[in-house]
Length: 109
Image 1 (cartoon, rainbow, N blue to C red):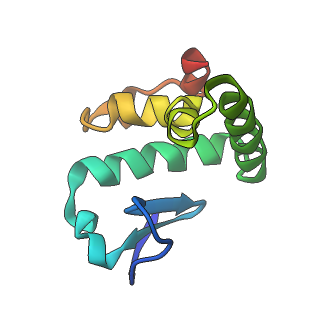
Image 2 (image 1 turned 120 degrees about the vertical axis):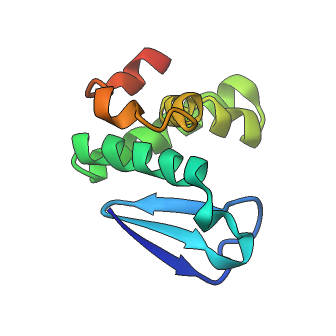
């Protein structure tokens, strides 16, 4: 996975995004040196690899819409997407990717 650092974009609370096969960190956030943020994005990278990229984005979008209907809140919907829940749960476990089972995000549905 290659990391790129760029000026702040998009606006809001985003500090990084993984668009397989790269991770993009927004320079003005200062988070690109944070091991936890890098780990979070590496987990997304693994999720995207195992779903061949495009399927990840389709699933992510559909699950977001389902969660939006369920919670009626953007932040709650985003926070409860299974991919985000796995990444949030293990972003501090630096050795996690070495022991992670493929498709483990399914456990967070």
